[in-house]
Every structure is written in C-alpha cells, then in structure tokens.
Length: 632
Image (cartoon, rainbow, N blue to C red; front, side):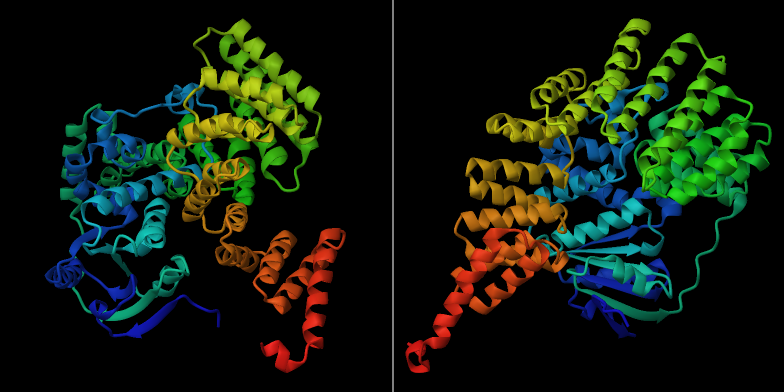
C-alpha cells in the first residue's frame, strides 16, 4: 500500500481533530455542516460555509463566496490591497470592473477578440490564485492574525480546477501562519483521493461520518425556468452581469430542461474560460457541447467550428496531445473541408501540434502543414487585410520552426520581414499585439544565440509597444544579468513583479541577481518567496543554499542542499557543495559519501576528486590517532 499523508478515523467528530485539513466523507446536507461550524464559532472562530460545487458556482466556486464575504471589510480597512490586487479580483468577481481600476493592462488583455493571437500558458492562471492568497495574507496578518478561521467547503470533490487549487494552495502556504482550518466535505468513496490532493506537508485527516440527511428537493423545472428568464431579463445586454451569472444561468436552464439555452450559455462559458486560460474548467463546460450543438443547431457549422476551436486550444494548453489530435482529425477536418478560411486555421494549429507540442517534435510535418495553411489563405475569400495578416502569422510559425532547428538567421529574417510587411499593408492600430510578438520573437532568437546587445535592443522595442507585459521585463533582465548589468537587471525584475500576480520564476531570477551583487540576505528573501510559491523549484532551492553558504549560515545551507537531493538525486553539484559543508562541520563520513555520489554522477570534475582526497586523508589521520587522544 502506498504511503499516505493523512490519518483515517471512523465515526469521529471533526471538532476533535487537531489537523489543519479534515476531509469529511459521507456527511450530506447543509444542516450538519452549519451545526459543526456553530460549535467552532462558540470557541471564537470565524466560520465560512462555502459551496465549491462547480455546477452552482463555476470555476471559482467557493472562492467567490469567500471573497464576496470579506470584500467590504478589506475595502474599508485596506483599500490599497483592492487596488494592488485588482487584476486577480476582477477575474474572480467580474462586477468589480465597474469600480476597480485595472492598472497596467497589456496588449494580450486589450486586443479585440479577432486580433487576440496569444493564448496564455496554463500556469499563468495559477498566478491569480497566489495573488489572492497574498491578498488574504496581507489583510488578515494586519487585521486579525491570531483569530482562528474555519472554512467548510461543501462538495469539495466537485470543485472546479481553479477553486480546488486555491484551497489546496491556501492550506499549503498559509494554514499555519493565518490559523486556518479547512473541512472539505466530499461524497462517499471520494475521501482518500481528496486527502491525497493536498500537499503532503499539510497534516490531513480523513473522517467517515455516516449521517442520514434527507436530500434537498430537486429544483422544479418550471420554477427554474422562471428564475432563469427573470435573471436574463435583469442582465439584458450587460456583459459583466452575464459573465458574473454564467454558472447560475447554466444551472437553471439545465434544471428547466431547455437545451437551446443550455447550448448558448455553456458555449459562452467555454469561450470565456478558455480566453482566461482556465483550460481545465473550459473543457468541463465544453464536454458534450459539440453533440448538443448538433442536436439544437444542426445547420450551424460556424457554431460547431467555434466550439471545436476553443476545445482544441484548451486541450493544447494542457498538452492533452492525443485528445487534441483526435479532435483535429475527427471534428476539425470535416468542418474545414469546404472552407478555406477554416483550413488555414486548422492546418496552422496542426503545424503547431507537430512542431511545437509533440515530443519529439516533427519539424517536417509541421512545415508541411504550414504550407497547406498558407495555400488555404490563397484559396480563401477573406478580406485583403485579413489575408495579409494570416500570411505573416503563418510565416511566424515557420520562424519558430527555424529557431528550433537552430537556423537563427532565417528565423530572424522571417520575423523582421513579417513586421515590415504588416507595417506596409495594415493600419498602425491593427494587430498591435502580433506586431509586438514579432519583435519579441526576434529578441528571443538573439538571446538564444548569445547576441546580447541585439536581444536587449529588440526586448526594449517590444516593451515600447507593450510596456505592461511582465514576461518581457523578466526576460530582458535575464539578458542584462548575463551581461553583468546588475542594477538594470534588478530594475527590470522589480518591474516584472509589479506588473503581474506572483510567479516563482521572476523571484528566483531576482534572487540570482542579488547573489551576483553579493547581497546574500536579499537573495535569500527572494529565493524564499519563490519557494513559497513553488517548493519543488530546484533552481531556487539551490540558489538559496548557495546564498546561505556564502552568508556563513552553514546549517541552513546543508538543509537546502539536502532538500534538493531528496527531490533529485542526480544533481552532482548539490552533493559536492553539501560535501564541502559537511566536511567543515566535521561530519567526515557523510562528506565522503557525498563526494563519492558526486563523482559517480560527474567523474570528470577534478575538484571533486581533490576534495575527496582531503576528506579521506583526514579520516585516515583520525583512524591513526589512539582512541584516548581522539576522545580529547
């Protein structure tokens, strides 16, 4: 049996558990949960009863309720936090867009739907989760750090990907510091998997509590339809209201037995969540949607094509390669067969599948599909401006392949000529996002071949067009760091941090910068921030170990090297560095074992052999000393 990070208790009261996370299996119904929370409230705890049911609340079910309850207090106590975390909050609570100003929007967020040629990577949505946790941390630490909070998350096993991850990461990062306990209520049979979803470092207890509670009456279809119709009328043409109420509209029209309405709103959810990079939750909304479209709108091929596109992009975003290829071949090809515009888009996506996502990459097949995509543009009846754009977009795909093939001159020329072509044929305000991406691609190629000055020039040109895209500042800083222009790199890293919810890579990079500056305690702070966000990030752990070592904090350095080795026992440098520190601590046998491990992994490093020889010599000296003297 595999080891678990949780204990199992039968017919036990959740109030008696001392674990920060309790997974309660089999307790159905809200009444029991409220009774349980009432007992906690008697001890002075603040309690939250949150429904995490995706069907009721969408991707952020449970999280939306939590922040809706706290929002007014935070606004009153710390309005600066609302402003600094506005980006995360409006994704969670769309209606806040009316009152919260989103600072520093970038071209990806502002581009018209028809010009949005960049999809965010899947891990970018995770930044919002960490930003929201930081918001809670900053506010509760200042307002009520010691006050216990107890959150009961009903239907936790039916939570969306984002909602579930928020609570798991909250408990990993801040359960102890913020004095938070979580009761995750799940259906019978789902307890063990729910426990295993939490980080192993978070003590978790699985409790079986078999309580017979009458199931709530199902929603009357007529009442559900009336409620949904009234909600639609209230929303009218307000897109923000529609976005905020999408989960309710889907739930109600499903209960009302209106598949035509269900089709409309589930498609809107698929489109919305895909655009936001919530790919797993978008797929959940799109599951079975193609069949529903065939039944409810059998002649609407445009709708089926749009559903197909969003599903394909979501699966590609999660690197579900087998599913993506099956979708493209079984759904995409028949829909695109008689439409050149669709063939252009489909063949481009298939080129990306083979040349970018598939491992190993198949550049020949990728290039073949790019040529088929380009031929489809020539056959299409697209407007002239759109034909010009798609030509350049296609050649940018070829530039990517040339870069992967280590043919940088050709990649650079394709990007440069594409940028000039757009400037020649399109109005200056059209496709601003893609123009910036072409400059960015040039910068990346120069950075990859070590042409640092040219890379800086093109990163700067890209930033001039899209100054609020965090990654551009982070990547320019990386080049500046290689050039030893440390103060400029520091400024860029700090700007990257300011422009985005937190992501571990930029804090690791800033830590590297500070270590190069000799500012070891600053470096340790930034590495620690990165590891708070991603504990398994080896570069941050190794960097912090080296910073501790250089700061003279030997025991902390040994602990970090040990943690890295525990995760990856193939890192010879970690063994070698720990071996030196163990030697300095007088732990000679352990030091020798580390040098042996390092040499086995990297036998050609002379310094490892030299250090091992020193350790062996000292061990032999000790062995020659009489025991009575050695004891002194």
